[in-house]
Each structure stands twice: as C-alpha cells, then as structure tokens.
Amino acid sequence: MLRILAGLILVLGLGSAATAEDIDKTVLTISGKISGEESVDLSIRQLTQLSRVSYTTSTPWHDGKVSFEGVLLGTLMKHVGATGENAEFIALNEYRSTLPVSDFKEHSPLLAYMKDGKYMTIRDKGPLFVIYPFDDKPELKTEVFFSRSVWQIRSIEFR
Figure 1 (tube, helix red, strand yellow):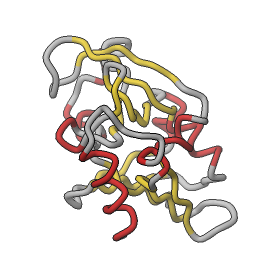
Figure 2 (figure 1 turned 120 degrees about the vertical axis):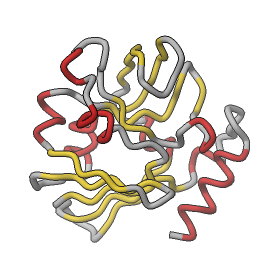
Figure 3 (figure 1 turned 90 degrees about the vertical axis):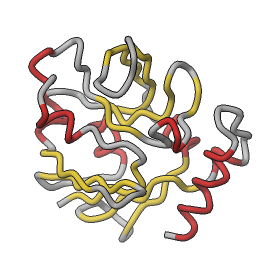
Figure 4 (figure 1 turned 45 degrees about the vertical axis):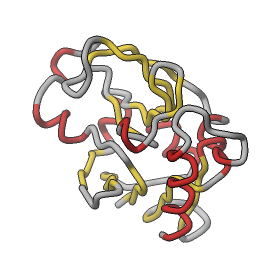
C-alpha cells in the first residue's frame, strides 16, 4: 500500500509532465480471482502497453465533452486472467463501488489514465478513472452508472 501511494505521489505530483521514471511506479493493484500470483501491481506504462481505447464523452463531473484514453476493463480482466462476477473498485479515499463483470462486455467501460491527452493527476480524478461511453449510450446516464464511475482508483478485487 505504501509503495502504491508513494508512486502516486511521484506520478501525480508532477501533473501532466510525468517523466518516464514516474510512469513506471505502481498505481494499481489487482487481486482476488486472478490467475497466477496473489495480486498484480501495474504501472501507468504497463497499462499503456495494453490495447488503447479512446472515448470522447460528456460526464457529470466535467464541463463539455472530454477525451479519455485508457484500457477497456474487459481487456484488463483478460490480461490478469480474472474471473468472477463482480469487481470491487477501491479509490484512494476508500470509496468503493462494485461493478458487475457483465458491464465489461455489455457497456465497454474504460479504465482511463489520460484526459485530453494528459496523464490525470489526483486533482483531476486520476490516476485512474472508470469511464462509461455516456454519450454513445444515453441509457447509462443514471445514478447507477455514475456511481460505478470510480475515480482515483488504487485497487480492483475480482470476486
């Protein structure tokens, strides 16, 4: 936990001018029903090496449309060999939200690490933020899906 927080402070304290060394710090721990190890630690660099996807959408937390870039949660799930029916997302402030894994296929939420071409800082809801394609699927503009759009994510546990 301390290693993750120290990495976040380094990466996010520099804002959008993150150095190569900063993006190699652990920002996410994935645990629970995954293949292999007890848990997997990932850096921003490791996340950027997975298939990148971009969404431009409006959200309740931003003015106008915003472009987000990241990895689809379904892709991340496959990468770590995750199984289970639910994924609990835990934020830096201990906020928790459980997403059904069925959302990953049905709605293609994104684990975003960039907003408008810059790495997200803690002040900017980063380093990681679950984003649904709200404008592409207006039925997602409900409190249920807004509550699943966790920001400042530090860990995911598959159950």
